[in-house]
Image (cartoon, rainbow, N blue to C red):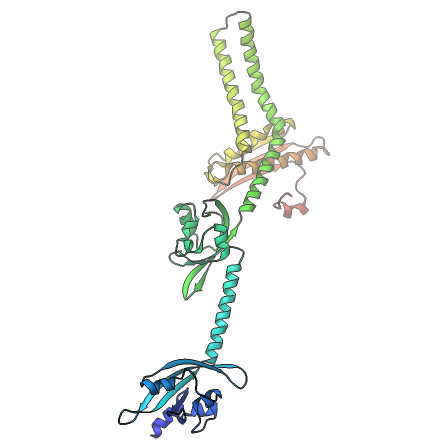
Length: 429
């Protein structure tokens, strides 16, 4: 008896034994310490300070059906705070099987309820933050890259409904499998720049993507934050186009001169033929063949110039292809050469003929070299204004070194002031 009384008292919850009038006829030490009850107190008075039994009383139910019952109960204690319990009852029977009392076990869950409420509020708060983030955010399964969740911005930017994206592969936002494979191959890198995604409407979307691993619902996931850079890319392309137009304006005089030479040859040859025909004179077959060849050659030359100008001036997106950088340098020089000849600027070439091919956008790279040549020209002209016999020379060199190709452009102009070195790559400087 002492052993069981000891165990009864040591159980870390509240235990009472109640008769049919809900009077406490036995209780453990934990109950006594917490509620200060004495034998004969009513349970509803001891627990809750009430004058009558609870409307949903598990003890009453056990007396009625002889079964165990389970409930969750709460009340406001003396300090005004709410207390919560988990309650379970069990019948105590005499030798004849009649229920003579009911055992009630209560566990105080107030702290747990408070924590649950904190967690619930925290969850609501973070869900609100997640939904309200202005950039699209996706939660992807770490292994399958399927979309587990996304915020409202993702739906707005990409034009999908949530059910259309959930449990779908993240590849649904890419142009094709090849582009998605390139993305997945680089997932260990946190930052992915200038990718092209597709909206639901199949419109292009230029994006930067940040990826970070995380835990979500006890599952390893990837947090994918998308930054829509479509407008900045479009603005950049407009600036590039404006730069091209400015460059074409710079080259207009030189191009006119370049076209004048083949036009003069064509005019001379056609005038000769016209005069011969006007006088009804025969033209030697060999001379006629030479004139025709000259006309064809200079027409091709003029066509090449205009074609180059049209190609350089057209609008184009960013696209890389395999190119020989020496050819790009020569094209930049060809389209700008007359500008240099008019100013008597000499070009020194030291190009390595065995350079490997590189991946680049040829039109943009050509514009880079044209801009450098324009800067070199202006620098030389600026110096000759103060030094009459200054050397007018631009040296262009290319060479390869292991995995790197280097191109240098040096001029005999004024040089770059030390104060400007740090600003060279600022836009519009």
